[in-house]
Image (cartoon, rainbow, N blue to C red):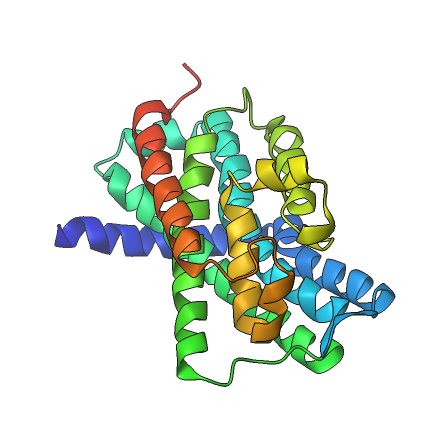
Length: 261
């Protein structure tokens, strides 16, 4: 087991180096959410509740959305590309355990996620009046939301990587799904102002609950009355994320492919 973990750690270092060399991926994964934050936060500054501006609401949603970008979207696109290039087939033929390969993916996703969250927090605080948590309980909630959100998005990214028929078409399949879920989950608009059918549809997916959880960390408690359930629904958020982690693990184990055959 120690050998598997050590190789996985080394594989993670290789993954980070490969990711850093792909400038387009670095810009899109790390800076694109920051750019969206700057655009939307600069345009929509109206107050949506006492002491809460849309910019603050949007920052919380973008932090949740960033976890999906670094986990689900990144892996669901890069794994099919590695499958096309024969990288997965060559790795499967080495003594490296599949567990080590996935550990490497988790490491690169975690590193990307930490950088992206730090950037969003910094820009949100400095430019858009985001209020950082003032209690240890809120920071603890933020921590488990990041951990559960990252695990969930990573596992679902691995599970969905078997859907695209080729690496070249992966982005065309994955990106629209992420964008639609962002709109439906209340990242770009107030969730309570969306049509009922959109709210019901989004409630099946983890991003809707991640955005709600992040709002419970960064927005005042009185804003909970404006949510659809008139509360932060923290227990439901945990249950949904854990359920998707279990479902994603089962799907990944049954459908993951090392080659296109």
